[in-house]
Length: 224
Ligand code: CA
Image (cartoon, rainbow, N blue to C red):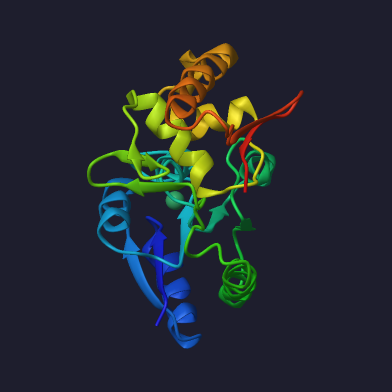
């Protein structure tokens, strides 16, 4: 049974969603606060996450960013405000989908099923990593062609984002959102500077390869 994490502080809404998810054969885990949600997220592997935007201890967008920093789990937002939709689905937050309150629980489960069909068909459930790299989460280490890289914290986080989705082009803003703890204080050229030092470290291992590609006016990707 696929596990789904639901973070929603209103019990009556959560009850309806849980009931609908169970009816469709999913195994929901319900958390009422962002803190509990993060704890559950760290402890279990979820096929998908449903987040309420208005949570008591943290904005759902912030929670989404934290979850996305190290994972490509599909995320659906539940929002009470139509004016939040642009942020939810735009590049800023990058959710997979959303529903606006009030909604029929069946509408939500239909979206859950559609997203899982899409991501599972595309293999996104198990983030596909590049053949040249391997990530050791426990040691915060990335190996390149078998050699462990000596990386700074941000180099590690930046490279991890790229390695987890080879071929996907990320803008500098997206990389900052995903790799920096305080993206607002970082500058575009900070990303460029880290990419430059990363490239030098990769070249030191293999000088016949340049696995990081620059897309002019767009950003960076990892060669797939
Ligand atoms: Ca709420």
